[in-house]
Amino acid sequence: MELTQEFRTFLHNFIESLPYGVMILDKHGAVLDFNRNISLVFGLPGVDGGKVHYSQILEPKIKTLFDQIIQEVTSTGFVMGKEALVTLGSEVQLALALSASRFLETDPARQDVIIICREMTARQELDRLRELERLKTEFISSITHDLKAPLTSVIGYADLLMDTAREKLDKDETDYVGIIKQEGMRLSRMINDILNVAKIDSGKLALKAELTNIKEIVDEVLKIAQGQGQHFTFTVQVAESLPPLWLDKELMTRVIMNLVSNAIKYSPHAGQITICAYQKDADVCVDVIDQGMGMSEESLNHLFEKFFRVRTDATKGIAGTGLGLVITKGFIEAHGGTIKVASVLGKGSTFSVVLPLRLSEHKPES
Ligand code: ADP
Image 1: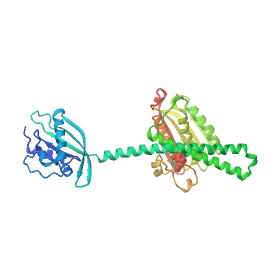
Image 2 (image 1 turned 30 degrees about the vertical axis):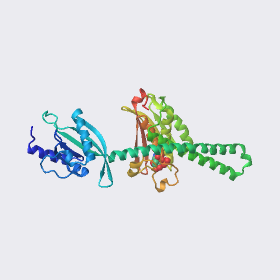
Image 3 (image 1 turned 45 degrees about the vertical axis):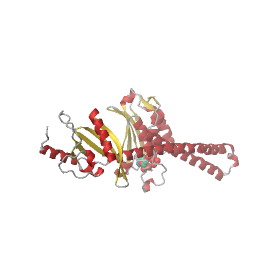
Image 4 (image 1 turned 120 degrees about the vertical axis):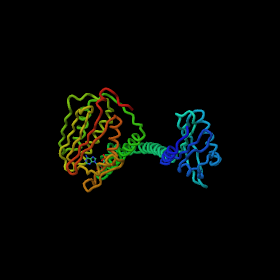
């Protein structure tokens, strides 16, 4: 079958519009058409209508590559992602992936071949970024482990000093030891946060799921929270009908504790903190509602980014790392859930932990 001029023009315009290099050859290797992209990559001369064999216009190294590709297409029908490094001019190197297949396969009389050539820079860059991410996670894990050991000694010896030498220390000295312990504990929390983020990022968070009543978690959090926020009124509503869920109890307790601690931290005028747990369609939700400083729309957009903290006069002096919500979200997502936030500046915020109800029957995948 001869291709009509109209079809040839359509085909040429089509391959010209593709973001790849394209060349079409007939069964004898004569060049039927190619686009500007491939001619730029291989520095091809213009071919004006007359049939030219690909070997006449490609430089020897590329010609050999084409020979292999065509041989493979002839026997198997296609070639996928053959990689090649091409030097442009005297120094620019281009990583290419070439694919080929029979073109117009429906016509047995024709054995045309279409060769498509993609630049691999984007893929290589992606591989490089993945490798950097892996090295970063490894580095963070090892350095934070190394930091933990001496810190445990600092905290331990500060405790020992307090217990054994208290009567020998004057008031200032007792305060100093107290500060060493307090700051040591703060550093330890920061290290744990960084370790947790590294675990979440690398997908190495292992869940120890057990059938857990949300009520138990809420009660435990409430006990600690009442100590932290003595000026607050706490209200708890847990639906009686909630089934127990397969949860990592320790991690989920930390999730709710983080949210309640934030509610306390970011409510300078105290007020009411409500924790509600209920079923909504195919989800179990736990809401933590405060009447604190709230957040702007703009802040909400960045809330789950690492190290993000709202920086206003109101938040000045409130300690934190900006990792708490990243970890909270990571722990919830590891259970197949999501976290939602609604907030009004100056009025308060509602953080909702949304867990799939199927956790009542199935363990989370980990
Ligand atoms: P941290 O509290 O350590 O700064 P988080 O990741 O827990 O880090 O929170 C990030 C930021 O989100 C906080 O610095 C704060 O500005 C804001 N934020 C979190 N929870 C609340 C809340 N309940 N009310 C108002 N702002 C909040």
